[in-house]
Image (cartoon, rainbow, N blue to C red; front, top):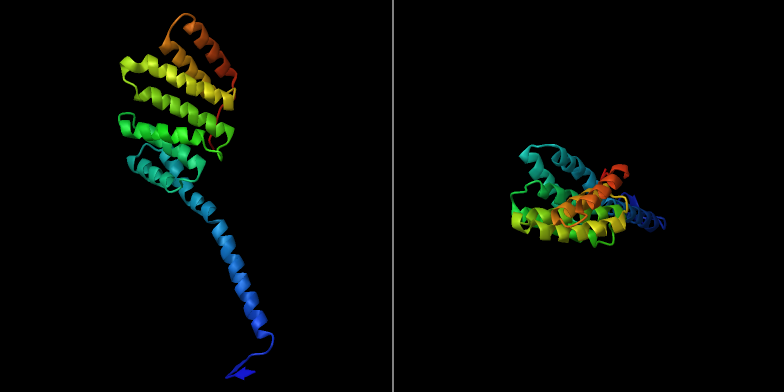
Amino acid sequence: MKIGPVNFSYRFPFYIGVNVAAVIVLLMFWRQNADTRVEGIYRERILRGVFDTDPEALTTAINACRSLPQKTRARLYLAGLLFRDKENKAALKEARDIWKSVATDNAATPDEKAWSLVGAGVANFALAEISERPLAAAESAKLFQQALGYRNNCADALINLALAQLWKGGSGALEEAEKRCQEALIAPPASLF
């Protein structure tokens, strides 16, 4: 059948169907990789905020992390960036809450859970007033112990556990802290990168 200059043969619907299917497949691939593209766009901004002392870079990095709430690493970076402002209690509380949420996230790796528990413990201690620090150290020590459950040679957890022991005090606190420090010295370093 011919309509104007276009000849509609029996092959025409087949070619239209193939082209529509190809467009659908391309859109599916594009949509599947959208998270990866967005993460790639924000990675440079996040890392600049992590390593740069410029307040604008810090704000940009925080906003970039907030735009990737489903990414565990972005949430860990966000908590770390918020923790920088130790005078801002609201930021410290938000950082602690983010770290605690990562620790319970099924998508997080054992290393990420260990790091998040260490961060939550440190934030918990930083939020306490000076007079409440021994009690906060005891609460934080529980988080550091949980972190060692996910990664038994986590140097950050071992060092912070040693510091918590010293803050709690009591008989044998110094010896226990020294033992933890020795274990931390031989532990492999941690890295988020």
